[in-house]
Length: 143
Ligand code: HEM
Image: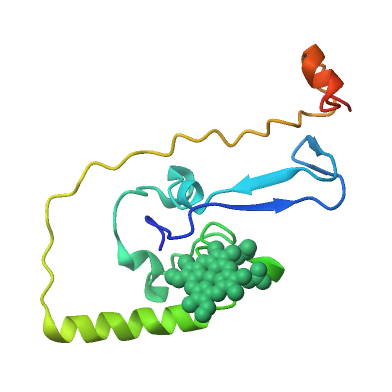
């Protein structure tokens, strides 16, 4: 669920304009955020490619920062099936392990995310920046 989240990206549409981290976002902006990318950020996970279940062991005192791990989304539209999915996962795992002994194989090379998540329709309000005629006409260089 962390390294291979089945829902790998999500979006929201801003119903009102807002500023965040020096960027201005007009109402109607589509915002995309990716579980796949955030669940693999070295700054948060250290060694994101490594499967290390102890990360989640309360005894180790390790804890992922809020919103660093969100395979079921979050907020008002968080997955309504989350408790069922988590229960099913435990039941399926327990059932399979009663009949099979899984073994590990050599790892396949993993590909880093290639998407660029920098805001495309927003820029820091005080950054003079540059704005092409086309972007000006589209009204996305204001501020
Ligand atoms: C591993 C299993 C599952 C994963 C990873 C998953 C993931 C997600 C994600 C990421 C969202 C979007 C949440 C957001 O926008 O913040 C979502 C929404 C939703 N999920 Fe799941 N889901 C899973 C299983 C299920 C199951 C078992 C059900 C129903 C039995 C279910 C029903 C729904 C529904 C109805 C929504 C829409 C909720 C809303 O928009 O208010 N999901 N899910």
